[in-house]
Image 1: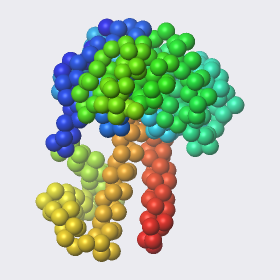
Image 2 (image 1 turned 180 degrees about the horizontal axis):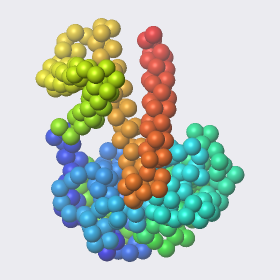
Image 3 (image 1 turned 180 degrees about the vertical axis):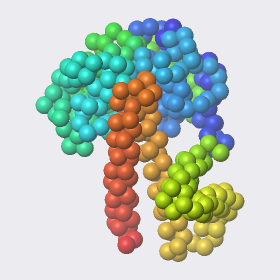
Image 4 (image 1 turned 30 degrees about the vertical axis):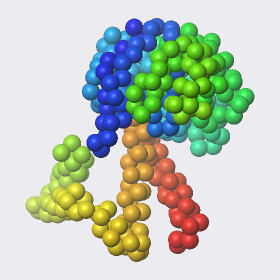
Length: 227
Length: 129
């Protein structure tokens, strides 16, 4: 299994945010975490990555989340500005590779290639602040993919994107033969990218089924606050 | 106690400088720690929210609420930026470790200014100057 989550619970300020969440993700699977705002999608992602301490068990590639397992994950934050803090986006994309001991020139070339694939080659020397929101999002995705992760975690990937960019991103994600975990409430995007969907509501799993089945279930989507 | 580490480290550096530069016992560091402890206790012990509710929208109360809100905003920005950095840095003290730390800190400062400007604009459009 790429990911195993067992009885995961998380509380903050005495409020229960996640309640006994359990599921598994097989290698190569594309799984959506669907839920309305405040359902606990992002918190669940942070708990899975070990960035928030929760009770229960999380196994990433069969091990507890830590620096070694995180090095095998690519993560795209909801707000791309969080990830782009270096003087230019080329440095941002190359940082992870350099830190893993990839020679400077090789890291630069890999980062440039990732930016080229994201259509941002011309902006490589620009700081993130000069890019549009959509470009920043694409830069954050290039950053996550540059290190060739085995698991790609995306938190609200379409939140800053227009229709065309969202469609292009879905096509790009479908070309990737890696495990994907996508937290979103964009039903159209999930329909294009995920094979399976887990619906969260108030920190609990409401449904876990093929995405097509869930997207057809109007009553379920209404109950989860998604339509 | 974990949250007090930065203050303790800062006090230790301050004490060292005071000892080396002025050749005296670290009074400044002691004052700093006392002020930190007093602030931390006051922050936890005093029911600020209830007092603010009782006093109503007076300038001092609004100022307090604003500072509290902005501190939370800044803490959120800092947390997210350093969380993103920690995901890039698979090897602690590996290449790019310090450089990314410096740039992430600079990014937090820059975003702090941007958030402050937005907060000011949000207040200004509601008539607060």
